[in-house]
Image 1: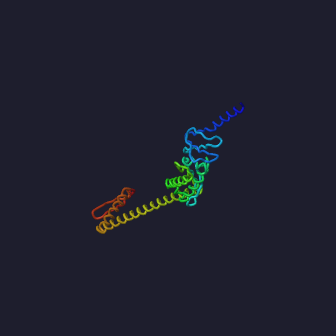
Image 2: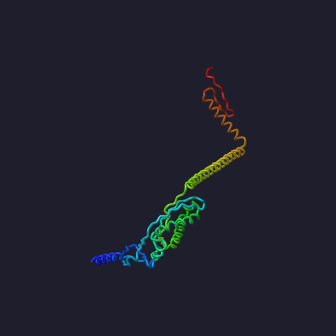
Image 3: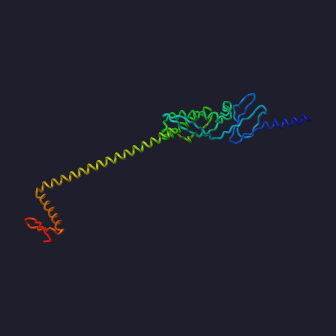
Length: 267
């Protein structure tokens, strides 16, 4: 009777061990102690195996995010800090090979290594400032190169994106100095333009004064000495009228001459 109970218990344990379940978003690889890793993938659902001889290894086949950070040098020897966000999943048809060569933690073993390799190779083709001005092109190169490299390990990358990019202190200082130099250059251009405008204005003003003097000279030459005498008479009248207003002199104009007579109120 004791043997019967033991046999029943062993049978229950064997039955439990012979059943396993693969959940949604998962696949299983079956390892056989005699034949090794089987060359097929087990899908979702409940399955049977030979207890104590076979063992299932379950893989998550859903797309998962993975971050890769790298510090590398640019073409002009500037250090840049880059972070990639990678969405990866295993190639379902290659799960037995992945398990055989890399194990269940395949992404931790492969992605950081190939990510750093690709980043260093791509960044070395560009100057530091080109990483900003040509960022879409840089991202495309990184994405294509990393997808191609990951496929060699039977890993599918659904998306690759540069999420962080920063430079070292030396480059930041150089950029600041360049901006200051550009501002100084623009300021110098404005000063030169202002000086040029002032020079042109002075030339135009001098030409105007010269033209005015020429016109006066031409008018004088055309009118003769009479114009000069007329200006002298008009100036003399103005001076005499001014002196008469103070009461000490009297201005007596006539047809032949202009007379100024002194008047002394006390005599």
